[in-house]
Image 1 (cartoon, rainbow, N blue to C red):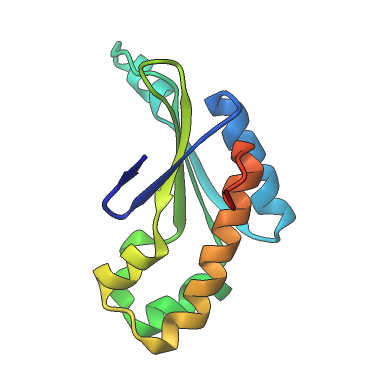
Image 2 (cartoon, rainbow, N blue to C red; image 1 turned 90 degrees about the vertical axis):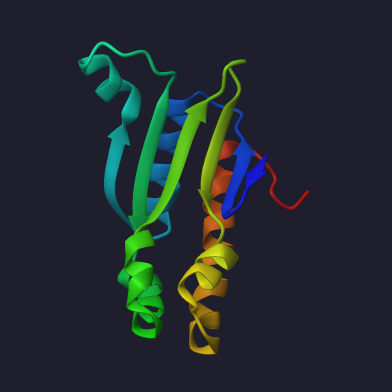
Amino acid sequence: MDTVGLTSVRCSYPVRETIDRLVGAVETAGLNVFGRIDHAAGAAEVSMPLRPTELLLFGHPRGGTPLMQDQQSVGIDLPLKALAWEDDTGGVWLTYNDTEWLAQRHGLGPKSAQALDAIRASTSALVAAASGSDLGT
């Protein structure tokens, strides 16, 4: 399932466990967890139904700063985000921004290429660890 600028991967675990696994993978990789938002809990606080939906914000200045040195506008899309959500059939997905889309959206140039490659590789590994999916297939 892909939407412009987004990549979605089917998960083998419930939403909360998927995000827990992502937190573990992020921390093991030496990255920072900047926040975790439980959108379903927020919806419940205002008596509105929402299937399980959690957002994780993560990253590291080593990865994001070179992008912002190229084009500061990319800071609107940093830190990186991953959204775990349950669809109407009970399937769980992990959705994140595609790095090529970030590059195009913000007009990132050649000096961002190395950082983008590193972000692409690390995000793929983190998502694979959290989702239980093999992204190489």
